[in-house]
Length: 59
Length: 136
Picture 1 (tube, rainbow over the protein chains, first blue to last red):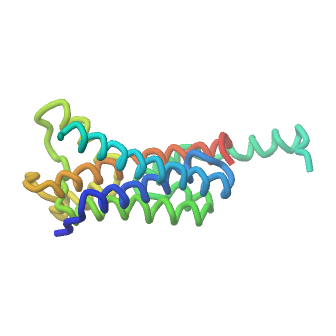
Picture 2 (cartoon, one colour):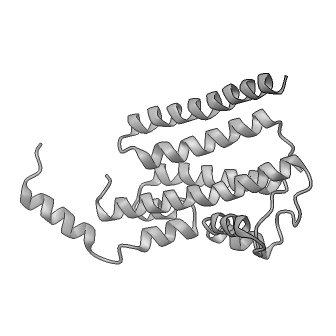
């Protein structure tokens, strides 16, 4: 059974979801790559930001 | 070079010939299948790798494949799982996935499988849009 850490799961999820979003939501290859990277950064960045927010709320 | 109205009309007419929903159905049944039908090999391969990858990770994490419905949330989960097409059917036939979610990673896995189905639906609709000429 695969047991990734929470962060590893977020990164894997972001990688695959961003790939699909990039390909399906934009028309040219360069714009697909840029949008995919943008979605990946938003997925991972928002997970990190929300994690810190919850850390401080829980203290 | 600019496209003349005649060329544009001809291209549109050509794109409407045949069964326009075939890429949509193929894309739903097999991840990336709709794009392969339209000879978009690179896009299809990346979509297939991403969707199959996230599904396999979900199964490897002992995620749950929804089979029966007990409440509203189960209906949503089953709808998401059905988006996987043949992956879901094969998974059910082979008895893959867990019956009960008992550890945290299995919960992640269940979400991975549902999201794989939703992403596959997006990919299938994209193939349909390519087929109808709404997207290039």
